[in-house]
Structures are given as C-alpha cells and as structure tokens.
Length: 95
Length: 463
Ligand SMILES: [Cu+2]
Image (cartoon, rainbow over all chains, first blue to last red; front, top):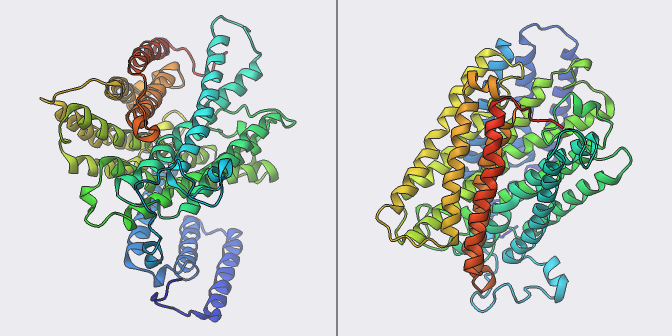
C-alpha cells in the first residue's frame, strides 16, 4: 500500500455484521425454497441475491471506498448482466 | 492503488530487448521466471503454436477417416474423441489466447509506450495457468474412462451421462478461463494506467483499441462459462439436477449459459484480429487509416452487442418463439459495426499506393474468407433458413470461414507483419507469398465444398 492512499478503517465489527447478514439471507433463501410463492419465487430469489452481492461488492470487495472509475466500470458490467437476464426471460417466460 | 502502479520502476529501454535476461537467472530459468511482457508473449507463442499443430494433425486425421464411407482408419469412439479434441484444442488453446496473449502481450505495452504491462507477475501467472490447463487436457486423455467425447460445446444431457473423462476436461477449460481473465485484467489496467504522457485514448493505435475491447469481454464473459462448467462438474459428481432433464433440470439453461460466454468469445477471437487488420492495411497502402474514431468505437460496439446475440446458436433447441425472433433480429445488428470496419478498411486502400507484401496478402485473404463467413452467417441468423441448414456441414463451413478464415489468417498476417520486429530479421518473402496462395486454395477446397454438401443435408456429426 502506498503512503498517500486514503485509509478506511472499516473495522472488524462491520465485517462480522455483514457476514451475519449474508448468513441470514442464505438461510432465508433456503427456507423460502420450500414455500410456494407462485410467480414471486424468482423475483424474491433474485432480490435476495442482489442484496447479498451488493453487500459483498461494497464492503468485502471495498468498492464503496474506491475511486469513481471502478464504480463506473462495475456499473457497466452490472448493466450488461441485467440485459443478459432480461434477454433470457424472453425464453423463460414465453416458452 | 493508482500510485502503486504508477510507481513501477521504468526499465531502461533501448539496448535491453528481450535477448537479455531481466532477472537474476540465465538460460531457461531466465525465461520461465521472466516478468518481461515480450518474453511472456514469446513463451505463449511457442505453447500456442505447438497446440495449433496438434489440433491441425487431429483435423487431418478426421478428414482421412472421412475419405471413404465406413471405417477407414479409426473406430467411431476414437473419431468422437478426436472431434472433441480438435474443437477443445483449437478453441481454448489456440484461437482464444492466440492474438491477445502473443501479440497483445508483446506489442500492447510497446504501442502505448509502457515499460511493461501493469501486473507483470500476474502476466507470468496467466502463462502458467494456461500451461496447467493444457496439461490437464492432456492428462484427461490417458486416465481410465478415456478421452472426452462430447464435442467442444459439452452439451447436456450427454455430457452428464458420458462415462469418459468429461469432468477433468471441463476442469481444464475452467482453468484455461482464468488465464484469459488475468490477461484481460492486465490489458485493461495497462491501457488505463500506463499510457505514455500525451498518449490520449484517441491517440492509441487501433490494435490497442481492439485488444482493450477484447480484454473487457475476457473479464466479463469468461466467468459465466466458468460457473457453467462448475455446475456441470457438480451435476456429474453429485447428481444435483441443474441441467439434466431426467433430474428436473433444464438443458436449455445450459445452452443459454454456455453461449452467453461462447458467443462473446467469438469476439475475443475476432476483435484483436480486426485490430491487426487496422494496422496492416494503412502500412501497406501507405496511407493513414480512414475513420480512426469510427473503427475505435466499432470495436467497443462489437464487444457490447456481442453480449446480446448468444441465443442464435439455439434456434432449433426448443427455446420460445419470442426469444427466437428477438435474437435473430439482434444478430443482424452485429453487421453494423462490422460493416463500419470493412468500409473504413476499403476506404483506406482507396487511392493508396499498395504494396502487396505477405501480411497484406493475408489480410486480403481475410477480407475474402471472412466475407463468406459473414454471408453464410446471414443464412444461419435467419430463422427459416437456419432450420434447413442447422447441424449440417453448412454450419461447419460458416464456423471455419469465420474463425480460421478470419482469426486464423490474421494470426499468420500478424506473424509476418511483426516478424522482423520480434526476431530482428525478415522472413523469406517468396516462401511467404507461396504460403498465402497454397492456404487460399486449400482452405476453399476444404470448406467451400462443405457449404455445398451442407445445403444438401450432410449432417455435422457424422462418421
Ligand atoms: Cu454466435
């Protein structure tokens, strides 16, 4: 690490909180897999996955504290992923 | 982090080309432990060209088997194995890493005035990962169970049920993917952080632009196939039922995930080749490139649109009609940025004083063969005609016109174009010209005939 980099001492506390949150979301996913939610099943599964990845990307991968360019490129990659999901639904929904 | 990269020691350029060791070792170790992008590029060259020869010999054996009906020199299982190996070797070991790993490594830093790539150690690691992946492919051939026989697309459900060493070969492809990702990360970072002072984005050579766009595909698309491959391995090991319909899985999901990577991978193969064309045509036409910015942008556009068309590989696989026409429509959009490049290249040659040396002749080969590849692609991209020719030799012909007529010829073009720069001497020009002619005749004899009998219904996977 170079000297003049901004230091963000996130502290172990927040990491443990995030980790617990991830565990909680995972257990929610597993639990509701057995519950019939009808057409909302996929939506809720994707929502939970999105929240979990947002936590990992921002905190564990430190993107929240990085320069803007990393966020822009990550957003572009995420945007591509969303388009890929949408296009896949044209098969899944109308099949 | 930014400062860390910028603070990389600048090596004394000039008298220190790759002939001299840049580490404390001499001899073979000075190569195997090198962090010099030029040496790593050359190490890639040796490995990749070795596998190219292997893949070519396998192709030759397949054609020999097909020279007469019935069994000629091998049994059906051996043929299926060679069929798969030809694909796996040529795709994952030759054509995907070919241009970026050899010429990208060697010339990208030079062309933007950087001392090396941004992460030289990672660069060496990517070579080792490539070698490990290749060794895994080789090992999978000799383990009990026998070599993989699924075809290079590893389609479900057969790839779950085949008793050959599918998991090991899949794992090899998984490992090779990481080599590709590391190269991509290196190139993106190098282009953003290590351009020489004054070298703005729109002053970069077009080969750099193409390699930069390619690097983004390598970073974003490759993880998708890595995940897909892992899921198949898990499915084989534990019978989870993600893809196998017998276990409640969805085989079309596999095809989606496979092609979400493998169509953009086509652009990993072809974009750097287009970058090389944008270098060679101005050189041998003695003119500056026509439409520099458009060509640069079209590389980015191709990289992006490449993500939107994958399901054109699945028109007859049973996906929904809505998806079929949407993907057919999107596929035709790829023609726009490709057309921009072609017209700009032709406009560059217009009124130029053309010097038809070997690299230029290879490029002419490319334009002719790649055009046939593109036009046969229109037939395959249209729903109705695709149904007639799907799974026939027409597809094989299209694929080889695009990949070998496209990227393959440009591999040779780049080799000739940069040969003097890389090795300090000129190739034998007569020999080189004869090679172009021989290639042109042989290639068209082999693959134009396939267009013909594909149209008459000769199936793709046949013995
Ligand atoms: Cu495609």
